[in-house]
Amino acid sequence: MSLPLVVALVVLVTAGVWYRRRRVLDVGCSIDLEATHDQFHAHVELDGVEPEPGDAVLVHGTPSAIPLGEVRTYRSRATVEQASWLKRQWTKLRSRLDITELYEVGFE
Image (tube, rainbow, N blue to C red):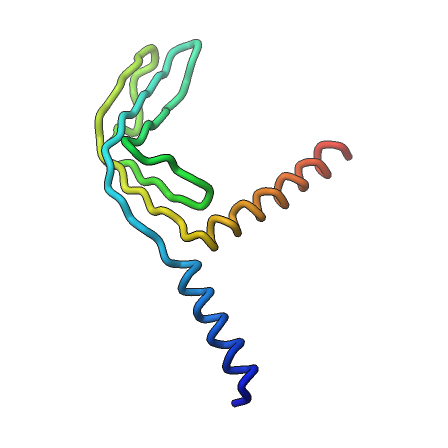
């Protein structure tokens, strides 16, 4: 193998590992559920963590539905997978490109 090919391969492997690397945190959270005639929403507030582009959040132990007309608040745990710097930048770039597709569809 030639030296430039080896260097390119090492750079690609390193970038791939760096892209997939993530930090996993287990944090507490509060879940606000509302199913009334005026509002229908579910909000999650994480304790001490602010999700950023590329992060994944999995909330554990929440109900799948509440009866119509009720407002409930729960305390639970959430797993936050924080994206690497490279994945965060890639997500920001993709989101900017994806929004331009809406312009094309919206003004045709």
